[in-house]
Every structure is written in C-alpha cells, then in structure tokens.
Image (cartoon, rainbow over all chains, first blue to last red; front, top):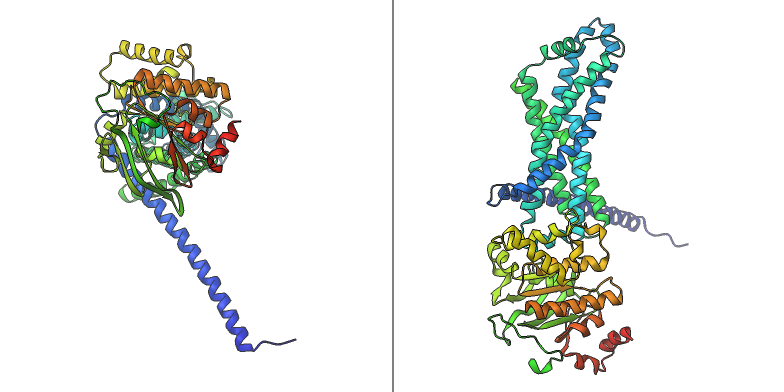
Length: 279
Length: 263
C-alpha cells in the first residue's frame, strides 16, 4: 500500500482544518448578521409606531376595544395568580419568620415584596404569555390570511390601526393589572396568614402599609409601563412580521412570549439598578 | 383592440375613453431572493373591459396584481394606473389611488374579529366618510343583495362557507364603488357550481358598476366566462394575448393543456 509523504499529509490536514474554520466563521458571521438585521428591524418598527402614534386620525375606537381585550379579559387570570402569589408567599415565609421571632413583620414583608418586585414581574410574565402570544398569533394569522394586506388596500394604515392601538393598550392596561394583582396578592396574604392564625383584616393591612412608602410604589409603577410597552411591542412585532405559512403563526406566538419574557427580566434588572442608584 | 373581444363590453359612464388604458404595465420584473418570479410582463387594461391573466400556479400572477397596488415593489419596469406612476406616488397619493381600486383576495381576507356588517362598514367608514349612518346601512344592504347574501349581515366570517366568504369579500370590495377591480384567483378552492356563480357575479359587477377588471386565474372556466381579452403568462413573462377564440383555436400544447383540463 502506497504511503503518502508526511509533508503532504500535514498539508492536507491543515487545509481541512482551515476549511472547517472558514465554514465556522462564515456560519457565525451569518448568525451575527441576522441578529443585527432583526435588531435594526425592531428599532425601525418601534420608530414607525412612535411616528404613527402622533399622527392625525388616531384610532380611538380600536384603542378602547384593545384596552378592553388586554385589561378586562385578563382579569380572571390575574385575579387567580395575584391571590395565589400572596397566599404562597405568606405560607412559605411564615415558618422562617416565626423561627426568627419576626412574624409581626410578615404583612410588611409580603407587601413590599409584592409591590416592589413579585407583583410587577410575575404579572408581566403572565401578561407576556397571555397578551404577547395573543397579539403575536392574531396579527400573524391576519398576515397569513392577507387581512393586513386587505386593510392596506382599503386605505387603512395597518400600523396605526392594528399596532399602535395594541401597544398603547398594553402600555396602559398592564400597569393597572399589576396594581390590581398587588392588591389581590395582599388579600391572599391575609387569607394565608389566617390559615394558621387569626389576624384581623384591618390590623393586617395597617401593618402591611406601615412599611410601604411612596418610593416603593413609584419605581414599580414606572417599570410596569415599560413592561407593558415591551410586551405590546414584541407581540405586535413578531405577529406583524410573521412569515406566510400557517406554521409561522405558531412561531410568531411562541417567539413573542419568549422575547417578551426575556425583555421583562432584562428591564427589571435595569430598573432595579437605576432604583438602587437613585434611592 | 376592440376587434379581438368576443364578449361585448358594457357601456361605461366613466369619463375615460374606451381605448385609453386604466392600467398600463411595462416590462415588469420582480424577484424574491434569487428566484425570479416576473421576468418581463407588460399589459394594458382598458376602460370597462374584463382582462383575464391566465397562467399556471407559480407563474407570478398574484405577484403581478400585488405590484399594481404597491403591496409589493417591482424590481424593474413601470406601472401606471389612471396615468399615475404607482411607484412614484407619496403615501397620501397611494392611499387616494387605492380608494379607486377594489382588490378581491384569494383567501377572501375577511376580518375574523368582525361581523359581515362590520367587515363592509370598515372600508366604507374610511373611504366614504361623508355618508350618514343610514346611507351606510342602505349601501351595505344593497351590495349584500347584489351578491345574494342579505341575510348574512350579523354572521361572523367563521360561520360562512368558502363560497359565501368570497361573495362577502366581493361585496366588501364593491361597497366603496371602485373604478378598477382586481381579482386574485376568484374561484380558487370553490366547487364548479359556486365558481360559475362567482364568475357571473364578476360579469354583473362589470355591468352594474361599470368597472374595469383584471382577473388573475388558472381556472379556464372562469376565464371563458368572464374574459373580454386574455393574456397568458408563462415562466414570469407574457406568453400569448388574444380573445377567447384565439385561445380555443390555438394548437400550442401549453395553451391546449388548459382546455384539456376543462374537458
């Protein structure tokens, strides 16, 4: 059997490795380029929404319809999760606080946890799942079935009619849902405290709110608006830019939830850092 | 041009001359990524006529009419509608032009979240904003009667059959009295009886509303029932133009394949 020269073998090996490296580099460049394109598209979409928000002929009727869809229709889900959130937090914290002899701190601790962090983040994540995916799927299916094109040819600006109204409704209604979830969470906490004890309603609430200041509310409310805007924006972006097949409706809904949830977490991190620096 | 037409053209009250094109397309090219869909398409739609663009699936017919209303931007070539260059129009100018054009989508494209009445009201409120509520209702009822579905007023699109959806979609298009109608595969996915009904509705609309129509189809029956003139596309370009008799008598195997399909 003929043996090839070692130099030729080394050259061949090096050429193969070089080829693999080039392929990997090209693949990574494509991924990076796609990411940057998506990023730029998202900002262009955002700029278009801002422009259309302040243009004439705002679609008030559709905006109120969307507020109803986003706000009122989410109430049952937010009621259940808000109540359970407070209840579970109380049941889990109570034994630890008893060990430290600080059970009287329970209402205040729960109230601050809910108002500052748990209420906004958990409610926003639930809204990302319900509202973000709903918007992604609805606009995605409208795109697939040419309803958005039909709107465009009937001289209606689909960004103004479909997207601006949804993004603004989410921006306005999600903070309200968060405050509602906070209130129900504290009610749930009171119910939790009464499972293994007897705490009067008025006493529980006065203890809870004696620890809460305006500066606990303000950053939470401000970040809630950002959560709402992010959920609306991502849901609409993914739906509006869905592909042409029916499969893309599912992809749009799914990626809307994933990206909106991720953005909520990232925005929360930024908000916490800013609050920490300012307060 | 007139001599090649088999179906007589209706009288039109529109000011434009009969031999003046309402749509003129020259050397249109459009590609997606590396796939060239339209290679070189040119056509003229004359006032008051029904022009059928016939071709196999994937020959770029739908892309062609989407370029006319600028839902897609062509790579090369020009499109003039009522002597206005579509690609040069501002967004306001485009919106104004689109008000004169009715577009029937292949899927119907009815708004799922709205009732039939709301679907018809939607373009009417925007394009004919000077109408009173009563006038709007009368107009809606009139077009629904024209398509034979006056009793479907409060139904949701999901409660309608394929043929009914197409009719309602047609009603939504004509409710704003467009001057040009663009039909994208109007009989696709329908049984032969319903297809014939839709074809005769297209003719009724041409006669009643004095529209000029561009009908995109691969259905030879629909073409034969509605055409004043036919343009056949093949591989993204013009293949043959003529009247129904020209196509019937053709010995070209590609053209004959459409008629074999019918038999």
